[in-house]
Length: 242
Length: 242
Image: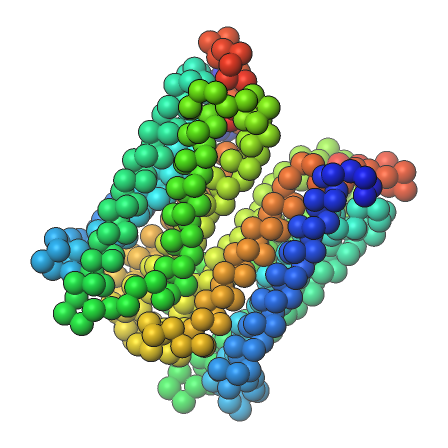
């Protein structure tokens, strides 16, 4: 495989994607830890909020992206193993997302002066992304992991599964960038425009989200990087995502 | 063509895309006109700003999306005519974008207390989208409209032209949603969370941006909707976007 120039190219981009993903998590963690006062429990709603951007970055961006990429990054694995890994990474993303949602609702509801929920464009689009993600999980699990789905149905559903999977992923990233915008304005006020280190850090986080997202979508949609069936894949699994 | 179910399906989605695009322009125009005090010239920087979201919606979202879609919506036209239309719509988008950028810089620089430029994530990502768009235009024009580019070069460049075209388009939409978030917070302050009609209107605008973008990308990437060469296309043009 190393002699194939497309695969050599893939490996470079794949490593770059992972470095970008890890950097954005470290950067978000540092921003929360250094500039936002760290994280806390329900007894401190302002600090409990800080779990929200951190867990969303790890779950709804990094794990979601890596769940998409398993079919490209681990192409020599059996199809069945890939599907289970895909579902498991998505489950990890889902659990972190649910916790991240709980912390933001808590931080609004438990504040001394409660803050209304679900008013901003960030919340509308972000929750839409979570709903699309969850529906995709249920439908994908039922169609591709649960036994009994007709082969023709699996094949017909696949383009929509891929499209809405990427749509939800890109919408998560866009929502995260709106969330960063909100939080930077709320936390920094008019000093945001002076670009203190906190602002530069969180802006760079947003840039990394976009680069990570762009790389994941490129690796997932470039036909040259598509996994080819291997002998270990049984006939039962044909027609599923490669 | 009407007997082909994929094409019947395409037509429904295409009309839906255009209705969604026109609605988002009307909604943005109404928001600017009704809630933001309308538009103005350099003598009133606050009102001059209002051109920015309106012209970006028409240029960098609606025209950009429609420039992408000409190869799908007008599939019976000659390839050469399609290319010229693609370039002309993109030129329209570019001109409106340049004016939209001028109005926002003016509104910052000419304000009684000047506002710093280029500090927000919206500005970083939005300007990146404009730069990607402009580079794409220059490279695309040189490779596909100017004579002399090698056929093999055109063909090799096409996947990247398509990828970065869609990347810039999606990044424009994400940036617009960040811009809406900023403006809603700056204009409404804490009353944003009470969801007055102005907030609902501008949030809905953001939702329409995302739906329009999702439809454009779906129509542009679904292989069933890809234009097939027609006899009028000369051999010289093979290998270009379909």
